[in-house]
Image (cartoon, rainbow, N blue to C red; front, top):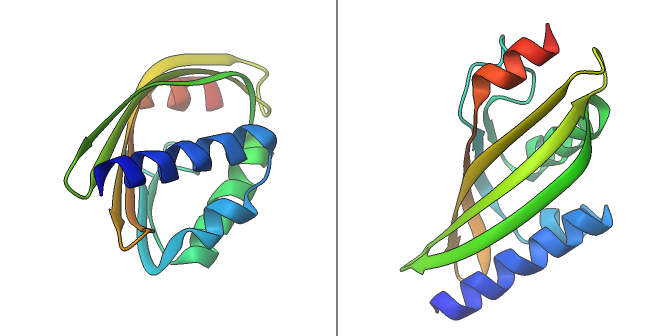
Length: 132
């Protein structure tokens, strides 16, 4: 199952890089938990969301707030239902024009071919400072 889970997650990154959010939303469980670690009062995309509609709103807000200059998932590791992805990105914060670059880790939980949970760990201080 781990290879299938990695292939699913890789397909979601490919969709994101094409700007096609629909396949990502279609792969979510109805009760998906989606979280970017951090406080929403520090940066609007931080925090927890639940359900596909909330994740759709996350991606709308992401596109409104940030413009990617680099988005590179680099390593994929599977352990049971978890897929761990290590990568790097660079963004321009639209509100201020400032840049943010950080390594990150994404953790997907995949059950029966659907994403049931997602967590992102990144340099939240950079986002907070660049947004102010």
